[in-house]
Image 1: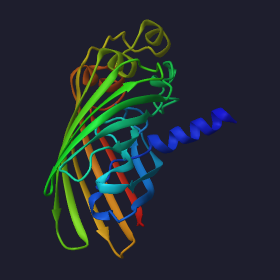
Image 2 (image 1 turned 90 degrees about the horizontal axis):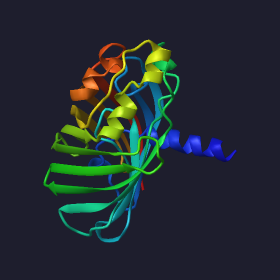
Image 3 (image 1 turned 90 degrees about the vertical axis):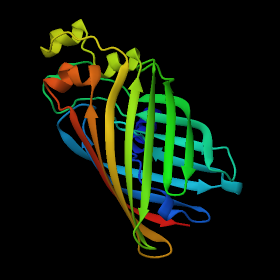
Image 4 (image 1 turned 135 degrees about the vertical axis):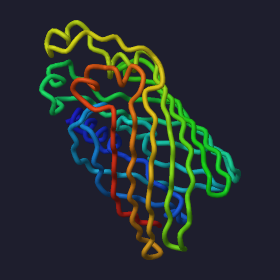
Length: 263
């Protein structure tokens, strides 16, 4: 029963997609529920739908707790705590989870060893100026799933179209160390024998660049709708990996649609 609860919690958090939060902020906070559509593994070309949940609880003087999404091509999410009060800067710790690779649709990648959920700890720094924002995050594996770290940088701008409608544009990139790259994109000799894919050793480096567009519409004081589409271009050793170049796609898309409730 404990493992079942753990897997259910991991699935819920890992499905989180980063949607524009600004338009739905209320005095207490907000929650959002919906669905996301994304590849069944990072670098894959088979897509599947998953539930999505996210939210924010406002504390005193600008501090908050929030469940947010990641700014890279993988399926992941984090619980973050902003410790700073009343300024253009936000900073704090983060606890995250990265989705497993378990029985993907591709018949060759399916023969490789499964990758468990990765539990992560790290932090973030965010700077806001008017409608512009920039976020830097760094997460370390604490579950011995991949044993390394991944960092991401995202910048964006929200264009206010009316009092109830806005569009957010974003760009991003992510960097991963050798341990992460080898776990998710490498093919060791055992996996090569079982899958028929060539042996491949992945090194550290930038793994993707991303573009995103989000739409937010508030149709009452408490209810709203959020939609987001992200495009990621795999690069470096991630792009050259056989699970991407031979069995997947260097062009990755993630989309989400969610209903929000402010309180």
